Image (tube, rainbow, N blue to C red; front, side, top):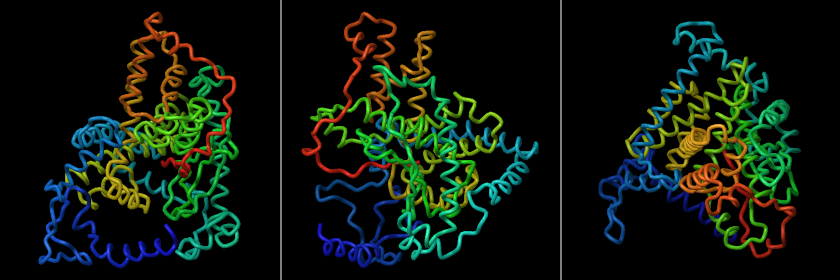
Length: 466
């Protein structure tokens, strides 16, 4: 597409298409679609009824469409109602733990009083990476243009840049804190090595709507992998969320998972498997693993949060947030939840009324189903781990479990279940056909790349979001 064609698309979207988009008080999700009439500037044109069927005669039904869309992200057969119920169940388990932290920090026994006092402390400037007020000219649309790279950000957005440097310093400290705690979780050498050798660095993300995200370093690690931190957030931070976010994006989260896959498990000869992996992306496993890395790997399996109530709160807040995603996403598109009701969930349980909550709900409205995959994937991985541990008893090795999970790459949850079941069966019945190869992988001495890139279709490197 040439530049003139691109401008034509933008003109159409802005001048024609957008006038027919309705506000959230008319429709908050797929549940209410199709509408009865065509809307112009948020007003129904009752002389123009909408066409509620496809040329094939099939009736359009937003709620039924969501039922089909959501399975693409979850890679299982859960219905929207089951997803909604799961969200409430997880919220009932997690929210009391949040209140427990609030009571501990405030030394108040009453939940309501503890919550009020905790929120006041939570919003204090000490909890963020700068005590300076961010100037308006470092947050407006002009700043988004001027501060689009490192050098210009230092020059035109100095307050934000100083805050980002503080954030980077904390993130580097957390790298060094978390990595040693995973030593008994993974094989770091030998034929079952799953951990990457490529280092992970830090970079600013100048997208005004960015959230923390991760980019791998490629199989040959010509550049280090990157944990990208958003530059234009409303308030840089908060500090109490960094440990959990770091675990999600770095080690043992996406960096261990994605970079480890590239270095140890991708077929260097290319072919169909490499092509298929480039064409597919399974959010439930990819993001489910990163959430599993937050908790239980770091949250429960280590002493990271011992005597660190604020950081524990940050971890629990985002566990609650993922439970709310199950409730809100399924609610918007299958139960008719309004945007206002959805925002109230985040106010009531995540104690967040910031632009982050508003942007997140917009995300769930815009990309139906995607946000449900995080906790569904996490819970599936936990279930597989608990089942393997129960069946194998003293023969269970967490490092082996993670090897057999991560070596499959980004896969549907059903495939991961089959792989873990095969691993468990082989530990119990080592002489069964095929079990020798499953339990004793051949160590590849040369994991370098071959010159197959010239035949590949170029695709931008994937970003993995929090």
